[in-house]
Image (cartoon, rainbow over all chains, first blue to last red; front, side, top):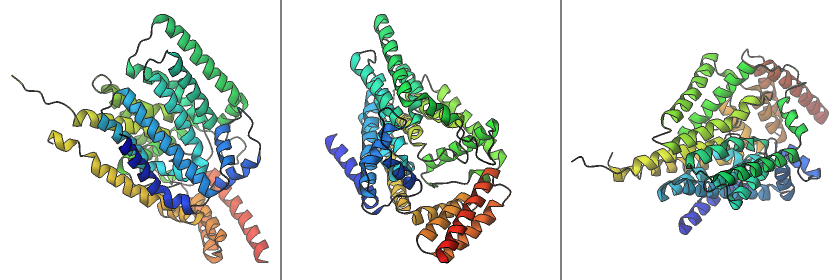
Amino acid sequence: MTWWACGLGLLVTGLYAGHVRSGGFVYEDARWQAARAAPVVLGSRRMLTRASWALTPTARAAHGLSVALHLIVVGLLGVLAWRLGYSPDGVRLVALVAAVHPLTVEAVAYAAARGEVIAAIGILLAVIGAAGRWWRPWPLAGMVAGAGIGWLGKESAVVLLALVPLTIWVTGRRPPAVAWGYGVVLLWLGLVGAWTMTGLDSWRGLLTLGAGVPGWSSDVPAWVLLQAAATSRLLGVAVSGVGMTVDPDLDLMPWGFRVFALVVLAGVAEVAWRVHRTRPLVTYGLTWTLLSLVPRFIVQTPRGYLNEHQFYVPLLGLMLAGVAWWDGWAHQETTCRV
Amino acid sequence: MPLRWRRWLPVPIVGWCVWQTAQQIPAWRSELTLWSHAARMAPFKPRVALNYAGALLGDGQMRAGMRQLARAQAVADLPHVPAVDRHLTRRTIAVNLRRFREVTR
C-alpha cells in the first residue's frame, strides 16, 4: 500500500508539475490575493483559506499548496473508504479516481477555489470520525475538529451536519445509551461553537448576495431549475470526463432541459433509495452527492450557478458510490446451485 | 463478463481520466489560455466574451481584444441572456472602453 500511495503521489505531482512551475494567477485569484493584505482575524469567515493565501504570495507556492491539499483529500478519502469496509482494491481505486479525475482540476489548479479543498478536508475528517465507534473521545474530537476546519475553509462545509449522521447510519454502529447522550451533546456544542466563531452576520449575508445588483431578482423556481441543469451537466461531465469549462452557458439551456435535469436528480435519489438495502454504500455515495448540493440550491448568487470547484465535495460522494458499485460487482462470489 | 475481467474494468476509465486531466490543466495556466478555452466552450455567454476580451487586452493584443469587446456587446443583446448579465456586461464594456481610450490617448 505504501508503494502504491507513493506512486499515486508521484502521478498527481507529475500531472500538476507544469502548472505549479509556470501557471499564473487567473480570474478571481487577483481579487483574493488583494484580500491578503487584510489581517486574518481568528475565527473570521474563511479564516483558514485566507490564511493559506497569506502564506502563498507567489503563484508557484499557491499552486503547490493546492496540489498538496488535494493529495490530503485523496488520502483521507482512501481512509474513509477503508473504514467503510471497501475492499483493498476499492480503497485504491477510489483514491486513484479522486486523484486524477478531470473534474477536480478547477478546485486544484485555481488558487481562489482552495476553500473547497480545505472544506473537503474538514468534511472528510468529520465523517472518518463518524465511520466507527464515533461516541468515543477521539472520533468525537475528530468530528468537531473537522467541522471547525471545514467551516473555517468555506461555508459549504455546513453539509457535514447531514453527512455525519448519514455516515453513522451506513456504518450501523449503535453506542451505549449513556455515551450516545454525551456524544450528541458534545458534538452539538462543538458545532454551535464553530458556527458562532464564523460569525452569524456573514451567514445572513450569504442569503442576500444578490441584493442591490441591478437586473437581479430572486426567483426561487427559476433558480432551482437552473441549478438542477448545472448539476445534471456536472454529473454528465463527471461520468464522461469531458466538457469541463470555467463558465458554461447554462442560460442557453431550454426550459424543457431544465425540467428534465430536475427529473434526473429525482431519479438519482430514487436509485439511492432503491438500493439502500442491497448496496448501502452506493446509497451512501449518491446521498452524499445530493446532500452536499443542497446549499447551492438555497443560496442565490447573481450569475453564480453551480460550477466545477463547487462540485468538488459532491464529486467525492459520486466516486464513493461508483466504486462501491464496482466493488460489489467485481468481487461478487459465484454460487453453485446444488 | 468473467469475474477476473471485471477487476480490470477501471483501468481504461482511470487512463481516460488521466488523459483528460492532463488536457485540462494547461487551460488554467494564464488568463488567456483560460478564457480562450472558455470561449470555445461557451461562445454565446457575454461574461466569457468579456473576460476573453480582458485577457487579450491584458496580453497587449489590442485589436483582437476590441473585437472581443464588440462581440461581448453583441452576445449580451441575445434574447437568452438574463437582464442582470446584460446590465453588467454593458457596464463593464463601458469601463473597459474608457480605460482603453485613456491608455491610447
